[in-house]
Length: 318
Image 1 (spheres, one colour):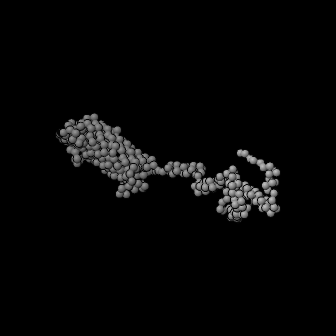
Image 2: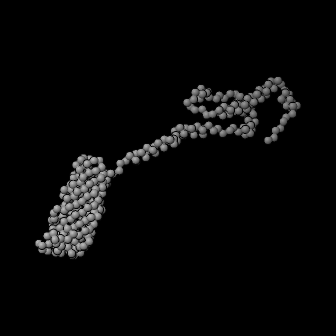
Image 3: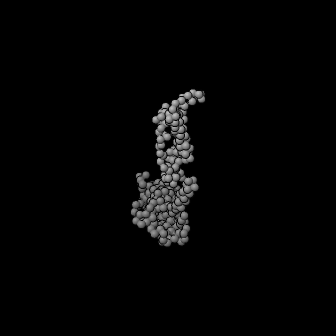
């Protein structure tokens, strides 16, 4: 940047050679020009103090700027010089609007506090932990047949004894005001008491076969993975129930006749009551149960067997 300094004699010759009134006008113009140059600096120093909000008392009391003759006269007197000075010293960009917008955004949309998010997570975990698991039971039970009838099978004068474990879980809702549970059963002990000599339909071949000396005992095992239980008054001491189970039985020989199969499909229908002894333990009394098994015509002969029985068990609730 280059500056051309004027010599004192030139300044005196150009400004003070003339009448006194003309010199007075020139001197007033110089004073007004200096005042107009000093005003932007004062405005910039006041703007750097920080943005004023509408709610602050200083903003309410500050009067609007007033244009005086000193700010207008230089533009009319010497517009070229004012434009050259403004280009040499451009006013700084005011950042107060950006700061004001950021402060308003932070006030309107506050960031979440870490402590609050941690408390919400702990509360959510607490509600998940408070959820109760479905009611479940394990029942150690045994079955004793006390009658034989021909409903779906032709076998006759045969008895069945079983022992095993049943699992009950409250997997469904309620139906007919009864709690509906899933049921599965495993019978590691199955014993069939049958006549020694039978025809192809499982019927005794002669009356002599009914005697104890001519009877046969066939062991086996059973599994019932599909079943349900409907239990009424589940929160009371005496709980009536209705149960149905389906599965398979396997024996060491073909039953109920020599023309049948080793494996048989089986179905159980049980009714009874369960008595509550404590919060964990209960007693099961199956008053009437129908136990059926047959080979479902896997072979040409399907004798089958139906027995009536009583079911006794000890249940553990968890």
